[in-house]
Amino acid sequence: MSKEKLDLASVKVKLFASSRELVGENEVQINFADKTTVGNLRKKIVEMYPALSKITFVIAVNHKVADDSTVINHSDEVAILPPVSGG
Figure 1 (cartoon, helix red, strand yellow):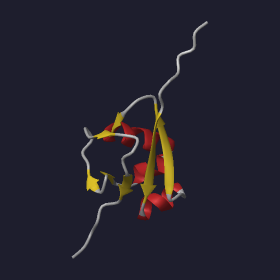
Figure 2 (spheres, rainbow, N blue to C red):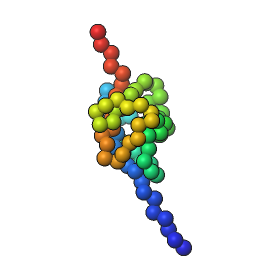
Figure 3 (cartoon, rainbow, N blue to C red):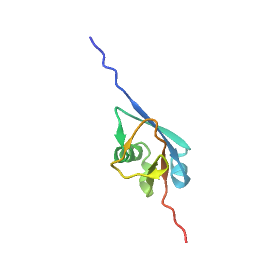
């Protein structure tokens, strides 16, 4: 019987402001079977932490706001940021 080893892609996601309050952590680890996109990460993190569906947030990859098609590599810095308001 042969066993296949799955290459899990693990991504650390930093949480700020209201996202940190809703999750109760400064940082969470999200695992995927392979590389993923920001859109897939968004879906998975809301499934894991349903309270995040209450807020609008953007995902930044390596200090830049990313769209849902952006590919995330395991070495990337990923953060959930609430929308910024100001005046």
